[in-house]
Image (tube, rainbow, N blue to C red; front, top):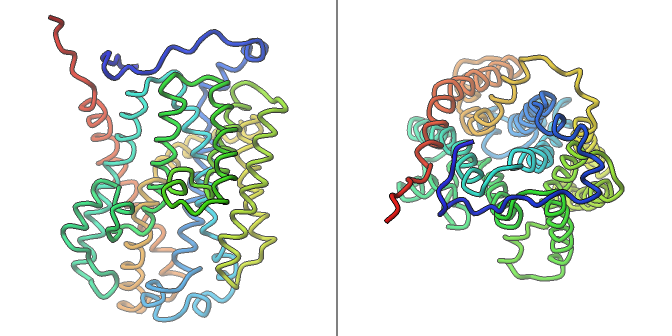
Length: 381
């Protein structure tokens, strides 16, 4: 781990473990440090769920590309595709697990550098690609103004009120707010079992109380509609690292109960073609899938290709929506390819593009950006 200067090494060294943690240290280090390939597979599943929704489960711009409403273009799969956006909720549960895992033993500076290096290189390339396609084919998606494009580079376009270049980037704004909360309230002092549990409990209470106020700023900070997913994932990582106990399973159960309510109100209430029982089932499966990883039930999923699947997920997620609509327009309306071949070729094309971004952008430039963000050690005196 790279050393940090005193100015950025803000995380205090975690104190000695309490009795509860000492009872669980026999195998926690091995479980906490091993790569969990099943999580990589779950990431790709979540991204493909969202892709299915964007191509076959919603109207709007994609209907123009298909030259018809997806419910008529894909009359059978449409009824499953309308639930695809719940892949985002699965992403958030995984994120809570992974962020807690990856921040263990890191300073605040380490945490900041790793997040910036992970998020921004592929994101900037996706912005350029989608904007270029928008300029070439404005009848699919209109290009944003220059000032809006420039503010999109910051990933802060939503609070700035600027038009989003990437439709999916609203989830990145949710993730960023989670990172900031976790960094300031947990990573700053050093991640420990007690601090993570306290963070989860306080955030849960704040999210529940947030429903009784109309304060917009408080809602932006607390994120009551998304908090249960991150908290549940965080608690599941504690179970993975330290073993099962009633407290952490209680946090998971509370998070699931709140999450299914948020999902049902937010998704079923705004879409007449969704069944509330199916929404609850999918949220339950999302929690159960990450719980299976936490408990070690997925160790059999040790195929090396899952590493590649996990690596492709983020760039695929960034480019699949708008660029996919451009490809669908060209293949289906322009070249006359049938819907299902168009669907398959488009998904495959987005996966190939994701691999190219990972290979030629993320792998070389992510580490460089991380090194460039290291603080300069100034001479004393």
